[in-house]
Image 1 (cartoon, rainbow, N blue to C red):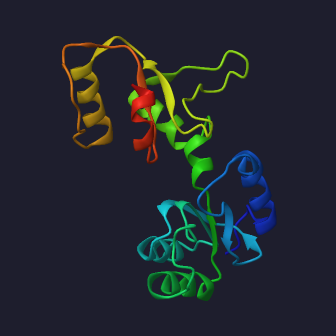
Image 2: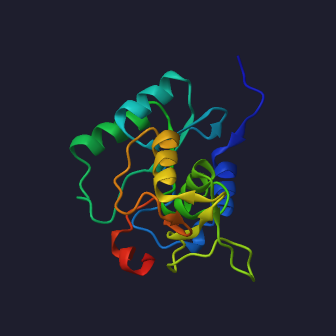
Length: 198
């Protein structure tokens, strides 16, 4: 049965590149279309990583395309198409599946990005740049956000909120009764920015 909403691979690629501001992001991997599949797309499945389990689940759902945060072809990877990468590529090609991947653009986007969504889930209000009205970041790439809680909280209350809303126990250090005034967060690897955040 044909689906009502169909667009071309090129239309989706162009729209994503514009909306996610791909041209303005220096990254460790190619952002955008990583594997070319069918010319038209009527069913897109999203996920975090283009793993074999994810690809199989997407194909089982009838996907023409997948959109992920962690794709393939990282700059430090072995450039040979062997092992796990070969199996994943062969599967995507055999099923005519378009693979779109956006790494840092999906961390930094001010509305749809991982930092924006983490702020929403945890009740954090990002500090905005006065001129641009975009989130004020601690780094040039826009990965390290800062802000404050949406209501007065102690450190202990915020830890409990993180545990409940993310369904995982956070690692934390400090006085649980201290007031929480400012928060700095990053959805990617930001270990090198710890001193700057402090």
